[in-house]
Length: 386
Picture 1 (tube, helix red, strand yellow):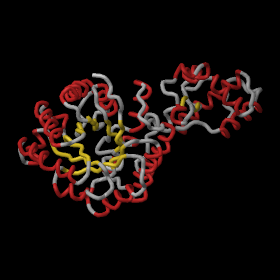
Picture 2 (tube, rainbow, N blue to C red):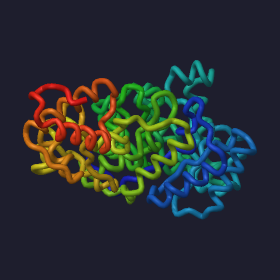
Picture 3 (tube, rainbow, N blue to C red):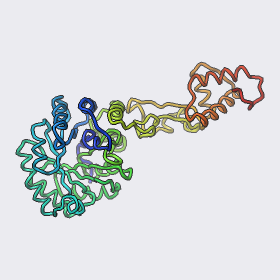
Picture 4 (tube, one colour):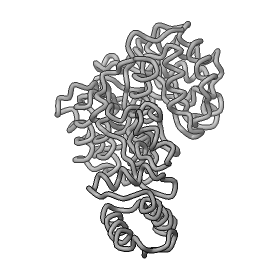
């Protein structure tokens, strides 16, 4: 199967992202995050769970009142009371979620397959009658019997749903199985297909890309990969990967993603790992002498992702693995001159410092070492100047 003509990112930071244990956004934070995502061009936002109560519904109304360009969705269990709670909040689409694996049908719903199909037939038309578009969310799709899953999609389509969400609820898929299953679903239906991947095995982004390759039209994401347990497919990873690997434009302004990442990190209390792909502080930072030398000659030597895509740039730091070229360059940037022996001594001090302090030296550290080396030119080579 080929790519869909358009890939739509449906960001669920304000729903599944907030379901991270211990995360709770204030009303002001929710509105600010929604505005940031909208300014970044994210086309769809899943903004809450109306059945949680009045406060949640107030936050959904507040986001809807911002009149964003993004299409707003809400999440509900496929139940009449949940559906009624979602009406009149300003969202134009509802994800009606229901378990589709035999395990969850039996042990969570305590019902059978026939009851699942009947519920879809009953509730989807009611949502349509309330003026909402419908996405049928297949909870635990990745553990569902494929033949039954195809039956669920058939019933959803006949009942008037626009979209089916394939949820890898417990994060057990790999990209190979994802592509096989989504390809099979794509051949059987004209519904929009949305991939909802969890990162329990570290493959949420890979599974999302595999789903796109197989014909999925929509992908759920969260900023920084926030979400239940190990989280969801990160917005930044999916958007950048689609562009760089496949030339697929999602309409997302990549330059705005670092600021969105920072906003969500602050609001969630979940700080971004230093080495988090694309938005981590250290992902465009280089220390190793071989890499720094290669970057200085031509950045393409060690650049897989151009940091300028995200409004960032390469940063060279000094440390244990630095070489003399990096030290010479750093000193030159400070207007300091040093010969080979002096550079070698400063490099020795840098390596000692890095091992003890667990951080790169500052400009002031370099100035101090340089001054001491210059003032001790007559010292035997290798003797400490500190």
